[in-house]
Image (cartoon, rainbow, N blue to C red; front, side, top):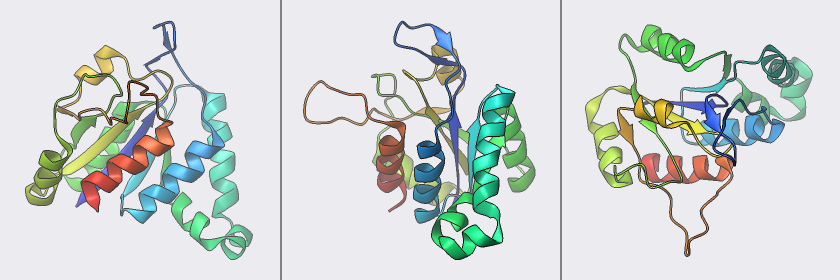
Length: 182
């Protein structure tokens, strides 16, 4: 299976439904990389258009890539090898196409009822298609409608036990990967 992740910081909505770029967090770098490594994801793209944000992420990734960090916490250092920092989604898609020889299937995710693709259906498709898949995760209050419309498939939302539905992206990622790949 060729599964890739993209954590998208732009274009996303804020709570006022304005299009914004969100900030990269160290927790998202650490936790999503570790989850990606656990489930055999090939590459974890952190996508942000702001140079200062990409530099921030690069400093953290570089720290975990040195020999001393490998000795201190080899599991985290190993997970950080999956991270690739990109300016936009097109760069990630182009890199996957170069690696795989074909464009990835873009899989959108949303807490809103935008998606209808059942996890079990996508899981079967992934197991049987031989194609690469790029699972797109939005930050802030979710990907813009235009960005989500670029997806080839939009997964159904993760539902809890009541109407509250605003998982941290790190948690949503873990649930999505578990449902699709375990």
